[in-house]
Image (cartoon, rainbow, N blue to C red; front, side, top):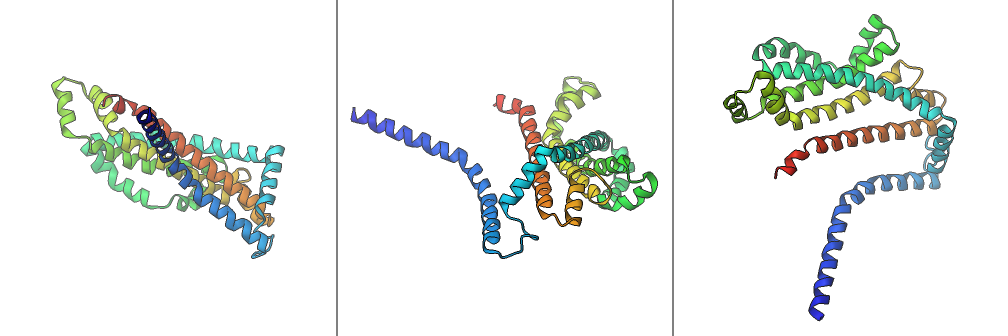
Length: 272
């Protein structure tokens, strides 16, 4: 009986440790935000900075609640999301096409890669002055800037992933008499998925930051516009609300892609 109780207690402690170990990364991830909010609250409570420069957390929360209730926050977030989706899809399609072409064809790499690398070295926001002259400051400008931000990392990571596919995989395809299309679909692309998804995640991050940047400079709608408008009116609570929403949306999109990558590659675990 004592042995059974001892074993039960041991298993209970082991399960509890596993439970804590599973939650530990999440708890550690919350540590820094909690610390920053605590310092923010303390700075406001002690009056280290004027309220006009650093509004209190409670006041920012109230502003965010009012903006949400009025629909203003949702409207600007929806505008930004619509822009980033359109631009990202265009950039992702072009980036995948370029990456696959350069990865599969040495001739395509020789022709395209040098110019593409030169194109990639120019910061995304550095194209805005020229594009303003060519397409104006309406939606076309924003979509082009977002697409460029997504295109570069997706193309480079797709190219790298395809070129790093082990040669023995290709030999298996030849032994099975796969066509070029079958080799690409059944061997090359599945093997390159980790690198491609890394590019897609980076591409989405670049697309989102590029969107906010172009909205800061040339927009009358969107979360980036809220930042500019709040700064001009000296409504720092509005600025902080917009910053928080931008960060949360970016985090959620990255987590969503991370979950999609795990789901798509679940066959690896199933095959173990």
